[in-house]
Amino acid sequence: MATFDTSTVGADVSPSFSPTLNIENNLIKVDLGDGYQQRLTKGINPSKRTWTLPFNSRTDTDTTNILNFLASATGGNNGAKSFTWSPPYGATGKWICENPTVNKVAYNINDIQLVFIEVFEP
Picture (tube, rainbow, N blue to C red):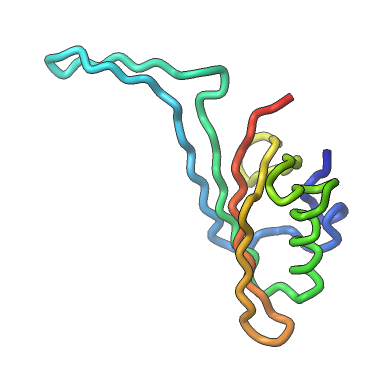
């Protein structure tokens, strides 16, 4: 399994400022009346993290390296295969990135937006 880091990708993979973390908790809720509620977590992994990561002002080479990693059979395989990544908060986990977005700002300057979705697999 590939790791999304500078040595594997061949480019600086430190996101720009303002990455966004969204935590989705998988709960079963039952309203019992009179304001009482019972809550229970579903499954062995009840919380799933999603990171939105901006990579601003990247060169064409860095942009190509990041996109090639995400598309390669040994990397992300266009979202079909997970890769290892260490987020800013929390432990290293397995992630997928299905739909990268690239905005060409100027000559040799690109803004990339990646959404990393946490997956649970052996």
